Amino acid sequence: MARPKPETFDKQKTVAENRRARFDYAVEDKFEAGIALQGTEVKALRAGEASIAESYAEVRDGEAWLINANIPEYSHGNRLNHQPRRPRKLLLHNREIERLLGAVERKGMTLVPLSIYFNSRGRAKVELALAKGRQAQDKREYIKDRDWKRDKARIMRDKG
Image (cartoon, rainbow, N blue to C red; front, top):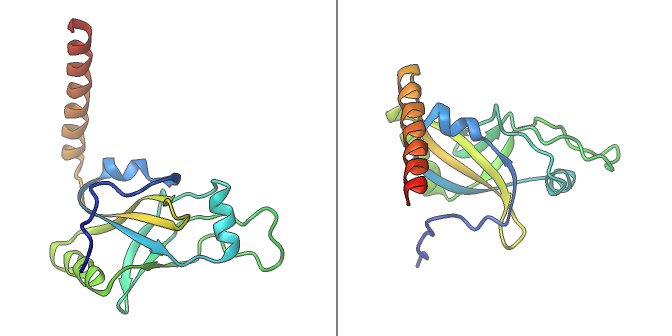
């Protein structure tokens, strides 16, 4: 029997965050996926070196892949160091992959990584978002709403 899914993921140490994704995309659903990494990639992540700003995820041949994520070479690595921008396999259940594939194909959604982090057990995880791209008008509305919420909170704080 599956255990209930927590509201927020168990993030111990966030390594990389894609802050721009929350602005460029309207996030519909979030998933937690493991990543298949090589040894020097894990060491580079633990050192806090990673960038997922231009990365995305896709489903190919029934497997999910993280494309264009930059994990720079480990500084103390030898000739067996990894390639910084290689595709990395995401570890998801088959039914999750089928659900993601259906949403991407039918609804025209995109798989965007929001963050890479280590959970409490020390495993590297990716927080994936099933998202829909925002148009320029939507972005302006988002900025207006965000600014209004900030101003409203400031007014309430000053009066309180």
